[in-house]
Image (tube, rainbow, N blue to C red; front, side):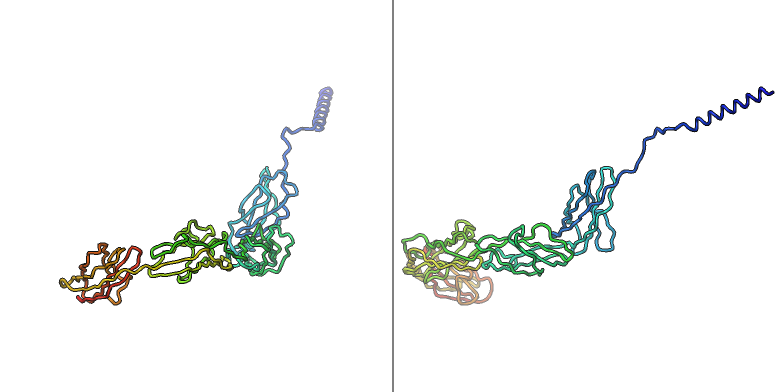
Amino acid sequence: MITRVIQYLLGGLMLAALLTTGCERKIESKDPVRSLPSRLDAPVDLTVAIGDREVLLNWAMDDSTGVAQYRIYTAIGEASQFTRHDSTTSQEATVSDLPFNQTVRFRVTAVGDNGTESDPSETVSAVVGLLSLLIDDDNMYTGDREVQILLTVPGAAAYVMLSEDSLFGGAVDRIFRSTQSFTLSQGDGPKRVYAKITFTDGSRSAGSVYDEIILDTYASIDSVYFAPTGQTFSAGDTISFYLDAGGELDGEAVVSVPGLNDIDLLDDGSHGDAAAGDGRYSFDYPVPTGLTVTDAKVTGAFTDAAGNRAVAATAPGKVNISSSDLPDSVTLAVGLTDATTARLSWTRTDTEDFESYRVYRDAASPVSLSDDLITIITDRNILSHNDYLPNPGTYFYRVYVFDSQGQYVASNEVSITR
């Protein structure tokens, strides 16, 4: 009995020892240590620059390691929530698809390679709209160095800087007004004026807001001449007049010849002008009938597109035009062959360079070349024509005799009533 008790005691002691030893052993986990992904810092130094119907955003990162992209958020107005607008891998973005003339707020976040998104940057705001500059109402030319600048801006502007230098070297801010005076640099030629706007919230315009104009303060005539020379012109001949304005385009060129009306010269490739837009103005002038000009000087005048008048110039040589004798007229008579047909008959002309008889009709007197042309007869020996009278009433007639030089003479006027 005692022996069995001792055995029980020894067994309990051994079990206790085993339990004590097991409690002191460390149990190592085979699972890896898991930690939350690191989060990127928020972008800093977010700025907005206002362009024409767009804005340019710029920002920076203290540490851009691990950045996969940036997300741009916008909110229209002061009370609306931000929504994701776009994304980019660079630290700038141009945003153009925004409502006009409303305040838009912007902020940017960074997204890491592991997909985590940073806190947003600070918020900036801008008003998007038309941003433009016009010089002298968008004219192509100016003859004055003093020009007017018209500025259109979205939102409220505080200052403007104007310069012909895109880097604005030496330029200073001036109080913003929508219309500004500006003095162009000396020397004729193309001029470009840039503007940089500072808005009341401290933001500035983006890119280059500019317009161009051509400064033209002087006009001149290189030469005036006509061709052919050394002959006496007559009706039907063509005199070609020329004025070379030294390459100036879009001007007004005129030549004056005593005994003729002023003749406008062209630079559009028509009416004898050889090439459009080369600064050489010309016109093929057909000599009219009944004109006599003796030893007439040809004087050219030119006003350029900027309104400058050149000193008048005279062509070498003189114009002579001799009027040949007019055709012999005919005597016209009329009668009715039946109730609706008029019988016209006339005497024969003795004109040597006869070209045609031309019969004209009108419902009122006098009959002229602007009235209805009834017929043209090129045989001088045909001396009559029958004309149908479409409606009751009185009809008036004349026959014009034309020669080969385009000169003409009218017959007497006759009338008949149906």
